[in-house]
Length: 453
Image 1 (cartoon, rainbow, N blue to C red):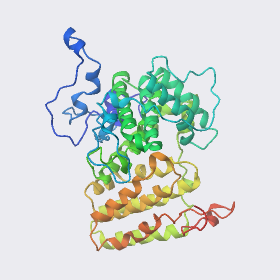
Image 2 (tube, rainbow, N blue to C red):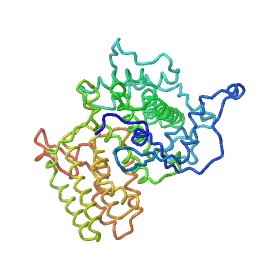
Image 3 (cartoon, helix red, strand yellow):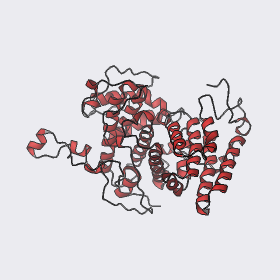
Image 4 (cartoon, rainbow, N blue to C red):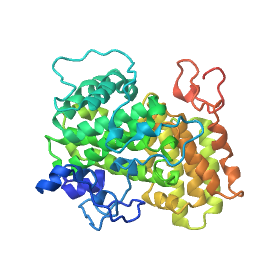
């Protein structure tokens, strides 16, 4: 495995030069301010609205890792935040006077209340870069005092998120913008009444982060490895948050399953990047954040869930005629058990729930794109794992939306096979019940737990 990557490799793995966006071709040109136009200078705004970010690129990038991989980002990541065409009856309408233009929407609500646990800031770590604008200062402060405590419950990892990441962001502008985008998205979660304002700010920073990354990183080296790792992680968290149903009226109601497949490819490419020996430097503090898979954990599966997996496999064997396709589904079903084992082994971590996207065969993702019935039924059972995994605000809501999409796609003859998944995702249900402090083998149940919510 090579120790360095060229920019085309990174473009495919993280920012991806070959976008497949659902936009119509447009003859609009990037905006330029009046002074730059008069003086014939290149305007900074051109990079934020580059045409290749808004339409499919004709550039075909190849790399030494094998086949070409194309994946999609949510269009909100490219700074495109149109005023919502429809407003949910449960949401608060944003007054037109508060929406303004794209540029004005970046400003934060001045009435924003910042609350959360207090933290001691080391005098050696400057959390706020000198060139940060005031509204961005507010968002960075929100990260330092509120958002950081939502990322991990592990006290050993908290200093990394509290001090190391802001320190890296100070010297790496693409990490800084990715961090600001993530924090602004957290503000949309806490203040849904100001969603459009905060989302515009998050979208602008995400767009800028992707652009700055392409300009700054030509290859992964020992000097920039930590920054590239943090950038990819922050982009992943933001993309997961953008799957929340509350953003659907901003992105043209793209099919939730297709949106999830975008994230699957993104996760696979990023984890592939993390597994290179660049990240195995013993001195790297970031290395502690990478989840290690343990094959010994695979046998720790509750008997109730094991029965569900057997029923899925029985359905697959009876209904899938093609032998190769049948084996693809069998592997994906087995990986449900492996993912559950990782969730059980690391009950406080949110990342193990995403490993199913890494474990499943790539051809299973192709079957999902084609909306094959068995692939959709397996996906519905994965939604149960996401729904009951350790709760994090960037993973809330979208598993329910994906399950509803699966239900709508399948005809009546297949829907009985979704009954367990639908029941397991009811509000009163809880998957993992631990009786006292006993071992995992004896203390877990998939039945409803009374008095735990």
